[in-house]
Length: 431
Image (cartoon, rainbow, N blue to C red):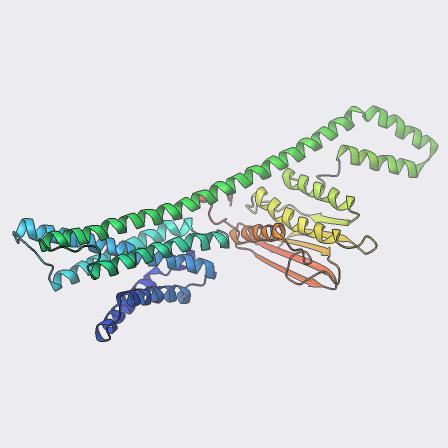
């Protein structure tokens, strides 16, 4: 959406010029009003598609918003100004049954276009921030009702031009007032419905994001609490463990001593957060995923350098690591135990960018390039990869996947000091 709002100054004059051309075409070759209306909508949508470099779903929503503003708000302004002119002619000038002359109609159209231009500029500064950084399904769901409301306005305009909304044998002045008043009220209702739908969906989306962050924080807290409890339990029995280790040293039973130390490390959770110092939540997450992999006899290799000073949310890092590792562990779990099953994580700073590389064995028959973690299918995988792509997009990063020789590789590159889109005021980005 942001790409469209930066070029509204170019979309608007081209659309106005094209609309005038279509009006002249309609005068020379009489066409039904509905056909001309759809041609105008198609012209505006085509300009958005051509001039914007955003993804197609963002273009679709941008087209629906602009078409709704031009059609519904334009009708509202025309009807309101027509009522104002008629009332002025009747009360101030004293004409019993005033009728709008051609020059008055042209003036009303010009003022309406001016009002629409101001509305587009105001919308560019506010809605452009609200409507960016969403998932694809959100854009499609938001666009369809706007197109339907525009179609309702078009049908109402056609009915008004054919005298279907109001038929009267009485005073022409009151007939015009009622006709324009009906269109004005209908357009106001459609505008209100469109605004409530669009901004209401945005509010629901934000609340869902807050709920997801809260659940992630709760999960991280529970992991840290469990680690603390295990460490306290180990500390309570430390004296007994020291006595046992001293006995093994005296007996010089080094193999038993090594097994005993490994058992102490496992029971106390000492290795859970060793993959990433300085990030308790991510360290706890990596520790949990390591245990899951080792329980499934998956070889675990992890080397992660913390991205200090990059302005990344710990929540977003957990989303990246968690979903990629879930997919990788699931792909390794489907490989028979006799074959090589491994999971390799590398994360480091490369030229002021944070590079995350996840490699896992995918199997030579099961993997399918580009499906994620070696062909993992299903709704959870799709949602997980979509969440990863959303985080990458918010930080203006890139994501690539590749499969070769039974190894699936996921690469995520996030630039330093990347300000997340959609953060109010940029406060939480900490850049």
